[in-house]
Image (cartoon, rainbow, N blue to C red; front, side):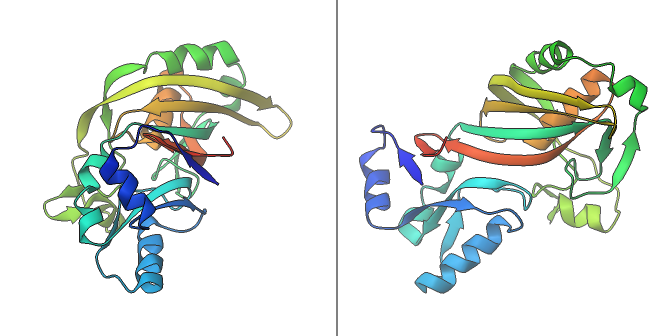
Length: 231
């Protein structure tokens, strides 16, 4: 279930009431485009968009806009702050920055298991505020008319864009080390400005720790005044 606050503008509230703004809890394994196509089929409306991509691995809140009147507000809705819950494994990185990708670098277990929760918290806090974040190679940002993930799949050289993002809050909620399985991971809640890549944030924290990190679970819980009710 999804809830809203009383801070909706009259226009957005009207779109919501008329079913032109849909609040969808996206399941894992589906792309945002998959959800848009599903809404097109179900409504018979061709002009359907969304306000903020979620990776296939990710779950959570997706705003889907149905019809010309709704899609006019796409930029406004995409610019809203967002909140996520994520879990990242420590000790390796993949080409996609998440567990759907191929491992491209790993670190010795002895180095990983020496970390403490305070180490994770200290590293994470260094990203609160504004910082220059490099986008993942597997992202929808366009370069020379093509999306980066299209270039990455073709193994073509590219210059990954760097942009200033804002992290409002970043709270480490869990940390665990399993010496028998040689696995370590941490979970966190992050509230951030538009355009932030959580995969990149996790990788940046891992690099700050000197052991790498890879997102294994990601859930968007809030977009502006919209929130998952379960959270």
